[in-house]
Length: 441
Ligand code: HSE
Image (cartoon, rainbow, N blue to C red; front, side, top):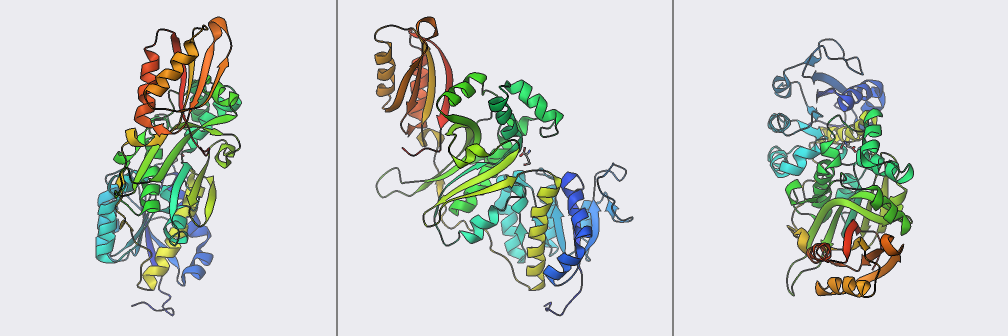
């Protein structure tokens, strides 16, 4: 067992030297004195695994430390801690498992892997008594996983609503403030380096869904995977949706929502509803003020009430900040031969199917402007047991539009109502359908 007087360096292997990895290497070098003081022993770079030795890099890696042999690096006897910032499922999973088997604690930013196969990694860490920390996997620099896991461990979290994808927030913000269409806003995001050349993971909501699964697992002490998350991206959000939102004092955001739902039948168990989709939220909601590529996570819990965590959700240095924070903790734990808090999945709550999840819809319907149309539209909602909260008419004659906001109903009932409306002869077009969040009923 190592003791407080033991000043032997802890040797760190970094897997990946892209925008995050290079900033991890930089901070390890630039902050070495402070890191040593905080840990009680120096952190020493043991090696940096890369795909190509000659690729251009943002940071100078000391000669001899670069290697293309990641498998060999994590198996070395002189490596104590491993940082995985390669991303993707393989080879990251095999490398993390090997690192743990070789007795290293691991820090990773890999949301896709954690959301797909987290339990395999947690069980491997448990087996060898090492830490697996991953603060950087959700919302970059923002401390949100540790607050959920540790600070709120004595409370009961009931809902988490996050803007956890900066690219889509940037695009929606441009559509709102500059009146851009989706394609134009995406192009601007790509020019500024917020969006990748292939933006699918961001704009189709895959990235946010992985983060939603991680947030839901921690908040509700259950195992939730990316496949459990209902996912809709922002590619179908139109200028008409933006205008409709503006007209009712709302803004459109891509939200990752995880909430505790009451039992669906007497004596049943609580469930977890997890979804990612664009939604209208009131401009007065704290999440509406999250602009450009920033992220924020809004947490509701029984005792604490409402909390919001805000900051940069991506980028090399901000993400490296979260990685280094974890690295200090796992290094201290390893020196003290202890571990931090481990996976907590005791509640084992089931995930509620999206159709049974309770939501509210905003529907803008272009209709004929004549007697009985409003009554027929209202009757369609009533037929599916959906109660209306507000109805207003915009325009008249050929420009007549009914804008309906429902009360809460199951998502299946609301979707059936929209399908019903689409088949009505007095309905010319449904110009906007979007869920409404962030308002109490
Ligand atoms: N691509 C993500 C974003 C950052 O746009 O927020 C990494 O998860």
